Image 1: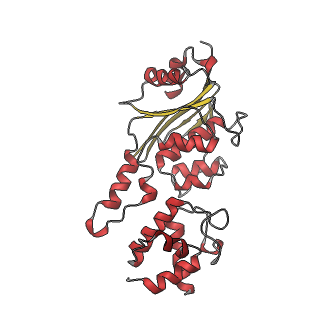
Image 2: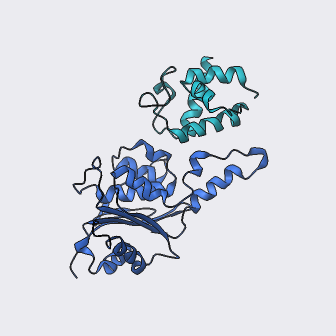
Length: 200
Length: 86
């Protein structure tokens, strides 16, 4: 089976793997996603304002793109960002609900509210990398490589798109399940199998 | 006033998730918005309005007043000191 994927990243509750290499993440008292951010020497203060889903997507995208020679300061029309997950923004929706739960302590948090949409993840990634191509976020019942890849192929139906930064970005109740990949037009053959294997 | 300024700095760091920042890193008179100082954004401004209401019982309904109140931590402390209900 040929046509490997240019770059990918897998993040679960206890491991970070980038292009087949397991990264060492020293654990601290901070949350897991913050430990990854620090261990990978990332520098983007807005990260700490994001909800967990956006943090997970941001990290997946950052680590996938890290070794690719992609200029984050140059606007790019030829890259699409496509994400999917199961729980949508339910993790943040729940956090927001807590800020409005009690009539006696009713203080809706604007900073929490802005993340109560899953597609904010694709927006954060696009802003960070100045990606101006198509972006979409789909919610599926479960991880489904065939559907996932059909969305990616759909992005390439636009002839101006040369690459797709695509990810399964699931975060709910402390459970993190992320697979990100950078796929070029030449890598669409066998994409379903590659994605399925990388997710295992 | 200095005590209130310190209290506000701690609250700002917490509610705005200013990771790695301590009260000493925030200049009392530095601009809170714009490219200098804390470089906060519009969502941060809304969060500060919630902070005033939640912690000090101040309802800031006038957006123009907010511009003056949130000029710096010192102006914010002065406003809180004069208008707090709790």
